[in-house]
Structure formats: C-alpha cells, structure tokens
Length: 236
Image (cartoon, rainbow, N blue to C red; front, side, top):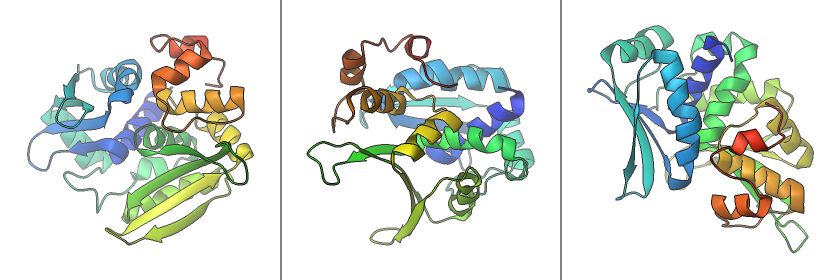
C-alpha cells in the first residue's frame, strides 16, 4: 500500500474503534481480546509506517479488551486540522474529503472500518447449520455513517439498510449472501484474523460454528495465528 492507502485505512480504524481524546493529545484504539494479533501484526506497524511512532499495546482486564494508544500533539493536529477527524464523540464525524474524492481509497477505508467495527455473521435460513453469510455494520446515526454508504455502493454490493432507534439512533447496513461475501473478501481484503478465519472456516466446511473462538477456528483449519497471512491463500 502507498501512504494515502495506509492513511485511509487508519482513518477507517479511528472511525471504527478509535478515539481522539477531547482534551488530551492521545489516540486510543480499543478491541476485543481476540484482536491482539490483528493489533500486533497490522495496526502497530501501520502506525509506525505512517507516523514513525511506537504506539503501546496494553490489556484492560476490567473490560477484557486490548487497546493501543499513543500521545502526540503533532500527529493529532495533523489528524484533526489537516485530515478533518474530530476529537471526542464521533457524532459530528465525517469521512475525510481526501477519501471521498478518491474512489481508489474506498477499499482501504472500508477495510479499517470492517476490521475494527464490522461483523461477519452466518444465519441458518432454512437449514440446520449456520451457512448464510451476512456482513453487518451498525453505527450511531452521524455524517460518516451515512457517507460510508457511498463507498459500499461504489463497488456494486447489494445492501440493505435500516434504522434502529430502540436505545440510540442507529443506522445498520447489511451485505448478505455468498457472492457478496466472496466479493467483499476479494475487494476489501480484511486484515483481522477474526473475520478472515470465519470466512475460511465457512469456505472449507460450508457452514460456521457460532460462538467459536479464533483459536478453535485456526485449529480446525490447521493454521497458526502468528504467521496467519503467510499460510493462507487469500487475495491481498
């Protein structure tokens, strides 16, 4: 990836599970325990390549989560004043114009969003096993959650959307079906082993095992997490 593609992916990560502190010059990215290898193998090197800074990775036992953080006024000024990301709550966040004006960057931004805040599920439909794929996003209704629809539809995905106002105003997007999943994995090329292992398990066995762990899926696939992407044959 070139620098613009890397920056677009980082923007997707921040809009997904990231946060630029409202007052402190701190960037934080929070994920589940199973995101550790994704953080180590992808997010930390991405931050290093972009900003030449060594971000920290720590575990939060109170939330059963891993998080990445770093401090830098210079980087945050760049992200907010030049790129257009916002501090604090993302209710007024937009996808930066340098991405929206360049379709070549859509897949990179969507990759960052999907790897951190997207979901790959499988439903039973009319069968006994969970075989039918569903890619899903759910965000608070805000400018960037509406703008991302433009990026998704640019690739010709058939997609449904709806609003869920039971707690907070949420907008949900769902891309369903085998052809859409195959296309998503080819066009977006996710980096998170959580998503990729679900896809590979489904691809090999024809169904998905709900609530299975990342390690259980890798064991079934005879794959090792550390060299995950060196051992699989997935379009990159």
